[in-house]
Length: 117
Length: 114
Image (cartoon, rainbow over all chains, first blue to last red; front, side, top):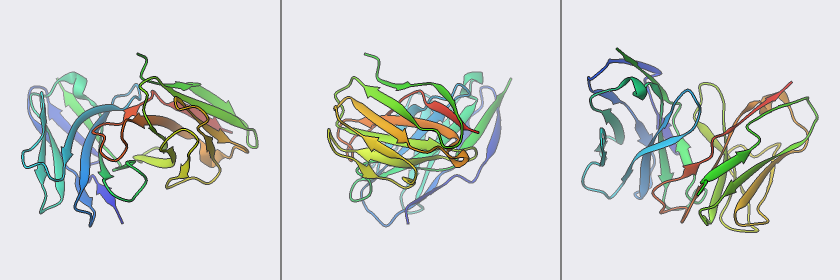
């Protein structure tokens, strides 16, 4: 069965430091996409970054980078230079490119990140 | 360009009552999804649609029905609400479904069933 595991229910990081949020995934499919979303206390889901299973380079978007290790089935999110506004829930998600529910996302349970001043 | 909008934002129902949640998108997306989010959980797929007039079940479809009569709208109905349906409901849309890089989410509807 397809599954996303986020083992860190909560994390603390000092402002301006880097932090890594862990995500492992389970699928026997070869073609899939991995996503990270941010959910602040206001509740909306904000897309951060995407990595395709065939992408050779790790994805980067500003202060966000995705450390993709395909053999280990991990897709960790790295946030550099943390800011107070980064305090939020972070969800890792997977989309299968074949079968499944036509592109729907399978979500992990999330990691709550708190940035300390 | 409003993106994905959801109506209402909040609702309180009594057990057994019915209601419809409306999702609208103005991006001409083919694919639309309804998810629910419970405390301590990620989002789980309820139903989805790959185009006007089509719907299909997701992971947790029981107690819900959906309709996609117009491409821009995706309705989620609760015929007889139960306390277990207390949740935050998110609608999302994407252009191509499987190969779309991003799903665009609405702001969510917080539903409480007493």
